[in-house]
Amino acid sequence: MSDPYLLPPTAAASIADHQAWIGGDAVRLARTLTPRALIERIDASGLRRRDSGGTRVASRWASFAANDDQTGPRHLVVDATDIEPGSFADRALLRTNALGVMEGLAIAARALGASSAHLALRSTFAVEHAIVHEAMADAESAGWLDDVKITIHRTSDHYVLSDERALLEALEGREPLPVRLAPELDGLFSRPGRRDVGPPTLPDPANPTIVEGLETLASLGPILMRGTQWFRSMGTVLSPGHILCTVTGDVAAHAVGEAELGRRLMDVIDTIGGGFLPRTPPKAVLNGLSSPVLTRSRLGAPLAWEGLGGVGAAVAKAAFIVCGEHCDMAAVATAVARYLYVESCGLCPACKFGGGEVAAYLDKLGAGAGTAADIDADRPPRVVDRDATVRHCGPPPRRRVVDPSRLPRRRERRARGRGATRAVDPPTHRRSPRRSGGDRRRADASASRLGARRSADSAQPLVRPALNPRSDPDVEPERVAPSP
Ligand code: SF4
Image (cartoon, rainbow, N blue to C red; front, top):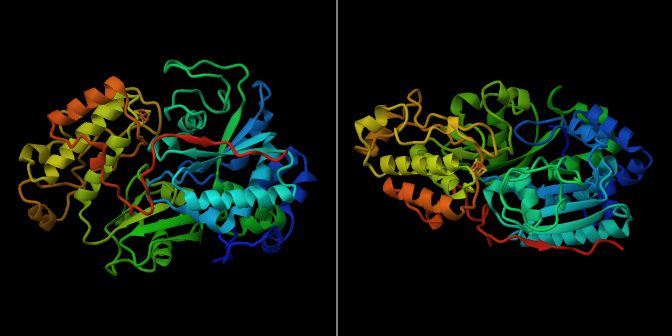
């Protein structure tokens, strides 16, 4: 594999060390270019966002920069929440390359015409907060932040923060609900004071805002200093560069690693995780909770947007939770369903009610109380038909709860007694943490009727607590004084 450019072997002790590693002063170079020329360079590199869609970074930035219709100051929001279960990539990047992130932030702010940047960090990331403050001080003394004011925010760990609009609400100190228009149209602090939940309207000024991830920012300095051809020499034509992958579950070592895009997914997971446990290809791999499950037959696909997209999977956050040969997939599905039920914010009744019923249904099967009718049905009859109802975030929901084509091994069914199980379609849409008022009571009552465990405390996180610490649910904005 080509040399890493996201995770240095050791964290740079100074700006000089960082510049020696990437090959020069990328911020100074960026200041010699116009914003338009900067975006063209990024476009030439083919850099894509590290998310499910893998949108070209420059396409978004070009349309954001060209949109003069929206008034008000422009904001750059940096999502460092590591909110996807199973992901540790943001924390690994900050711990080893915080200066690269600051450098990328200064470059991105120039390209986008943003006068302020907002870094969203979970309140439980104590180590990262200290690192970011130190890196900010270094960046200020180097003059990188002369044109951009940075504010660091402490956020909760609600899953709905993976939705950009919910993240903006949280940064403004409100409940993390995706109730506003897209950030480019309804940006940060576009309306003073609180709003009731209702149909959003176009604010004036709009304060256009764009949300970017840490990997995008950390890639900018190396692209500017080493050139777009260097970047395109790695990965594939459609998916150039490297990606950070987190590997947990049934592997020898839980780790974050930098992988070249285009490599066989199975090899990437095996290498970063130090080998599968037991030493056989896993039964399945979860890629966070918002992507389709990667079954064994899909693991031979290339780790690239076109590669995983070709087998009905997604790159998403590359947070791979390995389920080895002896893993009980029905228990995994139950835990995922319960987590999503608890994390559902309750804005869309179908998401909350349906999620609760799915969790209760799987609980029933897991407890050995399932019947033949439960197993043979395409789906449990009481589950809400979520296809027909409104959703405010994430991709369209899955209709089917039980997929008859994915029968479990016979001995697994026997081991679970009368409550025989079938593999369950992964819940594929994002839901989040907050439950509110009447929706919560109705959802709880619904779940209770079906025998679900109602308390949020009953949610069993899929990942080790160290990787997904529960935190204070309240958002604590921490306004860090910018450079004068
Ligand atoms: S789909 Fe679920 S998580 Fe998303 S806004 Fe609706 S209720 Fe909230």
